[in-house]
Amino acid sequence: MLGLLHTARGLFYAVDAYAAVSLLEPAVYNLIFFALGTLALPALTLGAVMMANARVLSETAYAADHDHLTGAPSRRAFFACAEREHGRARRHGSGLGLLLVDVDHFKRINDTYGHAVGDQVLRELVRHTQEVVRKIDYCARIGGEEFAVLLPDAGLDTAQAVAERLRAALDRSLDLGPSTPGIAYTVSIGVAMLEEGEAFTGLMARADQALYAAKEGGRNQVVCAPALPAAWREPSVSQA
Image (cartoon, rainbow, N blue to C red; front, side, top):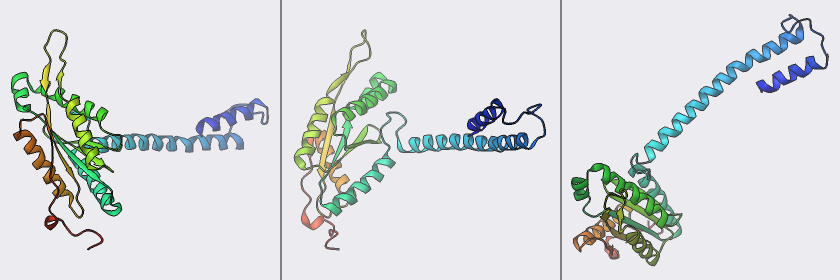
């Protein structure tokens, strides 16, 4: 607006609509242009402050919802998303799957190669996970070397296929350079499907039990949690 104002002022004098002796002459037109220009400066200042404030708020919100190391959504963001998807699944009767992914022998990697290498493993895990899962899936770091992948609108076959594909993609070696041998790592995955009337805490607990079984069974494998007994389920929305 300030640019348009000065353009209009320049055109005004260029066409000799008003033959001023000086641009600072205290005539009516000069006073109007000067007043408008003066009023525009506080608006520009306020706009700059608002833009800077919006950027700070955006960066703060991103930092709160994302893990600083891997860039994956944080535990807080994951449970917010899980609450929304759980509610949608119960309303529409759609499937909802959950994968819990844990890096095998991660403490050994940190102790042997250092935490910097362990951090690289976690970053690489997130990158490859985002390449493997579906676009509608939601991968987050929920603590340490443990990650969760939420699978909206998924059946058991889809959840198992995604989990097996992810396990195979993460059975790899971390490349540290041409003169350094790669560091092999694998993951164990627990899979659980939301049952009718089940709370998300129950789904999370069953996926965690399946993950524990995968690690106890030799690691580098996928274990699917058994269906929830009907007596353990919460009343569904239609029954409440």
